[in-house]
Amino acid sequence: MLRTALGFFFAFLITSSLAMAQQTDSLRRATDSLARVAAQKLQRTTDSLRRADSLRRDSIKIDTNLVNRYRVDPRRNALPQRLRPVQILPEVIPVTMLDYKVSYWHKAVIFGINFNQAGFSDNWTGGGVNAFALGGNLDYKLEYNKQPFVYTSQLILQYGKTKNKNQMSRKSNDRIFWDNKIATQLSKSWFFFGSLSFESQFDKGFNYDANNKRSPILISQFMAPGYVTESLGLEYKPTNYFDLRIGTGTARQTFVLTDKLKYTLSSTGDSVVYNVVKGRRVYNELAFQVVALFDKEIMQNLRFTSRYQLFIPYGRSFADIDHRLDLTLAARVNRLIAVTITGVALYDQDANKNSGRDPGIQANENLAIGVLYRFP
Image (cartoon, rainbow, N blue to C red; front, side):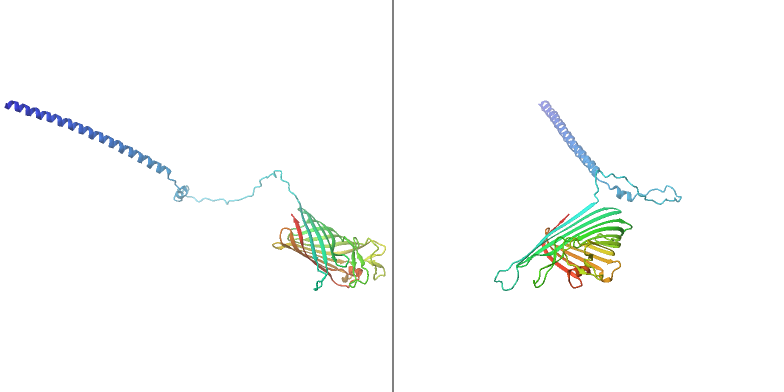
């Protein structure tokens, strides 16, 4: 029995040892599997971090200019070197015009129409006369400028009528003026010029009696008088809005193409009108002439224009010197509407004698509100 019990005991020990060995082997295999899985995960994590670090280093931008500040170049040669001065020379590059056309012609047109009207009822106790006035003007300028040659032409046409109740219609403005000038440049501001101008009027002009006791007297009409003036001399033009002409050689012809005007006796006993002897049509004279022109927009929408002419006839007294000053001030209200003030001051003894007026300065002034168009 004892031998049997010992057999069973040893068999139980052997069986238990084998079972424990099997459990140990299964635990070792499970531990190795877990270790392999952890190692693979750690390897993948390490690879991803390495790739991210590589991308981070590649995306960094380095400022080379900042790095170059700290660069120290080695000395190539210890001996001093002579440096040649830098010379900058202009280089002419040929440029084609590519079918562009240069226009040397410039023109400007000013056209205006103005009117004035006043009306009163029959029982108006303040007094007044029904009146209506209409006027128009045209200013055309043409210029050809190709240095050193300059040609300018200006045409001024003005005409106006006024009509009061129980009175004949009368002129309020009437002028024809055409000026042409050819000049060649001598220096920056000086030119040698030759000019030709024409001046007359459209309609008849009358001397009215203030008391309406006598009929109006005809004192002027178209080409009675009419003036043609030729001039040679020097021109000073420092800016584009100021022009001074000094005509040392000037000739003027005065035309009277009618016998209907009233003649007066001259100091020589001849019957003359505007210095034209009766039976003739033209009077010639030589003179020294000065013409000053000013045309500028002195402020926004306000333009000032003036023309002064001095005419000194050779061989005549100082009382026969002619002066004429034309002033124009135009204020633009909008693109079409404008207010214009014009004035003329004239000293001409020959015209005073013919019209029967007192000697002295003639003057007129006109204030107009109307349409004023300028192109361009």
